[in-house]
Image (cartoon, rainbow, N blue to C red; front, side, top):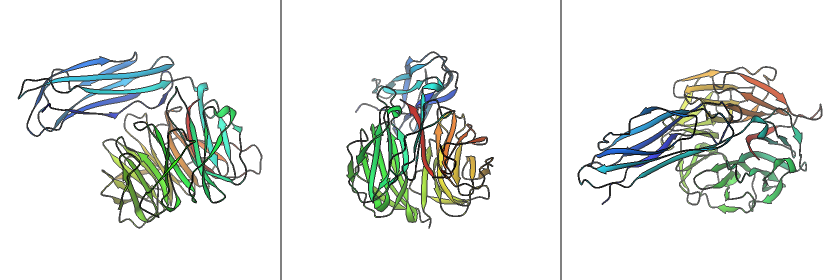
Length: 418
């Protein structure tokens, strides 16, 4: 039997970057065999200009059983374009002397000037605001007041961009999709009598997945045609993340659902008596779920065993959580009520409260990593959006209302390329 090493991109490139922006990259290979070593490792390399290898524990080495090696580097592109890092590992089974199955690793990013970046913000009563220059200026594309949009996502494909916003209209789940936000969004029905609360794009499966009230799960390649999936639960679901090889969805009463392909879902309970309002994942650290419990998040290494983490630095009630895509050390940010912001590089032990100037009394509803800024974007009630640095420590607020008395809630925000 041919020996098979396994490979993974443990810290890859973000979907979007700016010229001059720097990110750290880590490509890993593991030998899962309990008996055989892999030796004479050779790399077939394809690195873009601007990528520098800092650590190479693969070339010319031997991987004993249950061991691993990595390529660690830094990437700082000087120009716009689509860049790929490709690496193929070839090796010999030391026991048999025969070649093993080559391991292919790759990751890609789209590099563009900030003026090419689109930011989309969605909210209650048809709120749909779009910025075509990275969140500097905004225009209104508002929908009917009956459309309450809860979340928005981008498909991370610069060659075939698509934005999808989801929510509820007259008691039914609704989606809006766009290939060019400058020209507006088109509605698409999700055949479910429930609100859609969150949406995520899976790079590996090339699909959007939506979760919502009553255990709603639906998936779509293009945001236009949706398949409603049996989730096996009637619990309201509020957050979903793609974790490299599985979807993890969270919701009311500590509900956690997992799926490798989005079709078959398994349910477990965190035994944490809380509503899990959002979820984020970082390789090597694990999962953090925001909760409605006072100053509490849920943490898990594997999305199976969970523990409640209570810390004075966390918001009084949390609405969303995200992890940075570009910081050398992953930074988690949790947002919630009373302008609550907290950040952590060690979510098990330490959280630091971060004050937000000018808008301290707002409820912050959503936070996402932003490749445009190399930091974070957030959305709140009162028609505010916020921009934060890669450490989640320095935040700047911007009101995107066109009218003085427009205080609708911005529920979701994302950036991308159109």
